[in-house]
Amino acid sequence: MKILVTGGSGYIGSHTCVELINAGYEVVIIDNMSNSSDESIVRAEKITGKSIPFFKSDVRDVEILRHIFNTHKIEAVIHFAGLKAVGESVAKPLSYYQNNLDTTLLLLQVMNEYNVKKLVFSSSATVYGNPSSVPIDENFSLSATNPYGQTKLMIEQILKDLSNTTDDWNITSLRYFNPIGAHASGTMGEDPNGTPNNLLPYISQVAAGKLKELAIYGNDYDTIDGTGVRDYIHVVDLALAHVAAIKHIDHPDQYKAYNIGTGRGTSVLELLTTFSIISKKEIPYKIVDRRPGDIANCYADVKLAKAELGWEAKLSIKDGCASTWKWQSKNPLGYS
Image 1 (cartoon, helix red, strand yellow):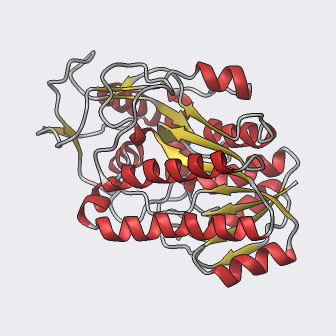
Image 2 (cartoon, helix red, strand yellow):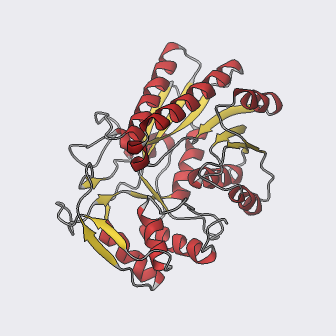
């Protein structure tokens, strides 16, 4: 099977391409490189020993999409492409709605033209908003607290509506929790533009001396140590979830959503301590005020993915920290 991967040079997309190829699939990538580097594709090719067709273009360029479907026998699509920073989405909501919704709608239009109706969508745990309890299962009510989350929620609704109108679409949404880690080789990892938005890259850059200290937003939550608790899923486990979803793409349900996490919560201080031990580095930090909208606990119920996809997370927080530090140490300037 040949799979089109939109946003395939990004952090999650590039790791997923490696695992798809390792599982025997062929991949084609389209990415506008707005938050990634084509060096990730070069390294994915070195890891897998396979050449990966790559189109440097925005998914909203319908003619390029048609060219890809005309020249490659695409049988399924994994859709990562989109803007993804929560804070930026609050500051630039129009950009997020335009980009993320238009990208998906135009992709679906072209897929429909070429009768390619198998899709795995990159969703997010942000669709649960501020959950009333944990662990969070797929039947929890859906809401969003920021424009980024709203775009994921709106796209999921579009995909549900699409699958309900016809019997030949098979669509799976994977609701990620908090991806961490890097490829075991240390040659692929998360390479954020500017100051990292995610916790572990920030910690690793403090450990490497690139950043002065870590700001921890609140230490008075009702958690094990007062800091926020999240479900940190290793990016390789996350990539393998996409392989499992593709294998299961002909499921009898036209639309299905799955939580992709570990089912365990880890606090900010626990993650910080683990990374410090593994890296043998002191990680300076300061406690600052809570951020509006942050919640105390967020972790997944993952029984459904295990039961129906045959997937579960295998890698630990230690694995995530060790691979991140290996990536940071071998690539102090990222892919540059």
